[in-house]
Image (cartoon, rainbow, N blue to C red; front, side):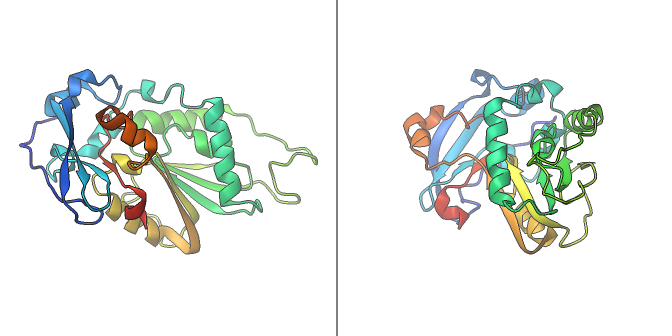
Length: 256
């Protein structure tokens, strides 16, 4: 990965407020499998600003520069990046999200953008029509392999996972790429989810406009990301755990 000249912006991409210096530290101090040697060479320092209007945290280094291919980072992740993500806590959280998104267990069409190894989709009930999109080749391959390795389940009459009388939906569709490159028809989905994804995008607003086109009328868009205005973020300051290689964290006011 080449090292483009820094072209930092001092304008918040969410509300056009001014970004005030917030944190600046060497990338060498960060231990994260996503921070590859190539990325550290391009980013010897990580810079962040806090918006004086909406309180969002935004990277002010080259990661949001038009000449820096942030997506390339996630296409080159090691499979080690996804190991250990399917924890018991994560499974309970995914079950909570499913209940909020589809309490009646209808045969809705759902797309999980940035699906990683497919843990969220595979944990959903069989009544969903599932699509997973992931730019990283290792993660996409792991998702397909994991799905093929799971024997078809036969639900009993007392099992609550599938809605009574419903025929289980077909296996998930896995797409390597992005929502923009997937060439999906407009209004394809009842639900689109981004779980720990938008903070890694150089232009999250453009991504959400694309998602809106893919949603059916009355569809649901779920975003889950770090809260730059949370008590933990304020207490931790520059040591906030989310400040690694991700680039943008909108605060609640900017999400409206």
